[in-house]
Amino acid sequence: MEKRIAIRVHEHGTPDVLKVESIDVPAVGPNDVLVEIKAVGINHMDIWMRQGIPGVKIPLPLILGCDCAGIVREVGSEVKHVNPGMEYVLSPASSCGVCEYCASGQQNLCRDYHIFGETRDGGYTNLQVYPAANILPKPQNLSFEEAAAMPLVFITAWQMLVTKAKVKASDFVVIHAAGSGVGSAGIQIAKAFNATVIATAGSDVKLQKATELGADFVLNYTTNPDWWKGIRGITNKRGADIVVDHIGGEIFEKSINCLAKGGRIVTCGTTSKPEVNVDLRRVFFKNCEILGSTMGTFADVLTILKYAENGIFKPVIDRIMPLTEAAKAHQIIEDREQFGKIILTP
Image 1 (cartoon, rainbow, N blue to C red):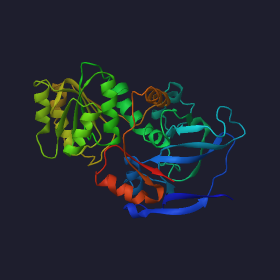
Image 2: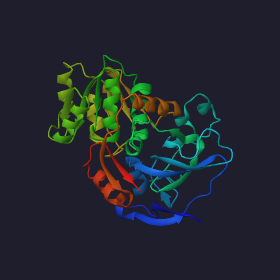
Image 3: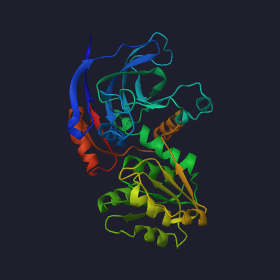
Image 4: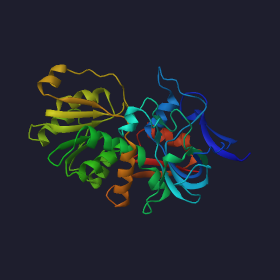
C-alpha cells in the first residue's frame, strides 16, 4: 500500500506532540477523491485541537488542518464533476446534506457539521482522501499557497460581518486582532462594503500592515489599555456599530463599552479566555446585540472564491514553511508573531 507523510497528534499538549510519520494512504470510496496537497494553511483551530478542549472528545490520532489546495490525483467511481489533474481548493467542512438546516443552506448549523482536522483527518499531509463534494476549482489567479490561506478565515469573517452583523457603508467596524487570519480577512470584507474600519492589534508593526490592508484607524491595545475610549473618540462619542472579536476575556468586556446604541458584537472564538464579565445594564440600555458565529455556509465559500478570483479579496500570508516544521509554526502562532496566515508545504 502507498505511504504518505503526515503530521499527527497522538496526545494533547505543546507543539512537540506534533509527530512526523509515514502512514498508509486511505482507500478512495465511490464518492471520494484522492488529492495531492501542495499547501495547507494553519488556523487557530489547529492550536485548540492540539492542546485539547476540556469536555470535548477529539479523536486521536488526528491529522490537523482544514484549509488546503493542490491537485486531484484519483476520483471515485461515482464522481462526475471532478477530474484527475484538476487544481482544487478544499471547502473546509462537511454536513449531512439532508437535515432542515442543510436544506435551507445553513450547513454550519447542522448537527453533523464537521470541520476537517477537527473530527476527521485534515491536510497536514501530502496525500489525503476527501469527499468529492468538498473539492472546488482553484481560482487561476491564486497560487496553491494563496488558495490554502483563504477558506476558513474568510468564510468565518464573512459570516460574522455580512450574515450576522449586516455590515453596511455607514458602519464603524472594529476589527480586533488585525494580525490574525480572521482579522486580516475582516478588514478586507468590511472595506468591500465601504464601512469605516478601526483595527486593533498588540503591536505597531501589525497596525501598519492593517493600514496597508485598508484600515482607516488603528489602535494598539497593548500600549493603550483604554483603547475603547479611543474608539469613542474616533466616532465622536457615538460608538462602533460592529465589533468583530475572537479574543474574548477583557477585550470582549471592554468592547461592550465602545458599542453604539443598537450596536452588534460578533464573536467566533476565544484566543485569550472564554469567561467574561459583562454588565448587562450596558447591553439593554444600549439595545446591543451579542452574536455568536461559527464558520459559514457552502455558498459563503463560493462567494469568497469569486471575490478572490476578481482580485477583491487577497490572502494575507505571513510566511511559508515546510510541513515538517509544523511544530515551529504552531509556536510562532502561539507567540502571536505572525500577521496573516502561516502556510505549510509538503
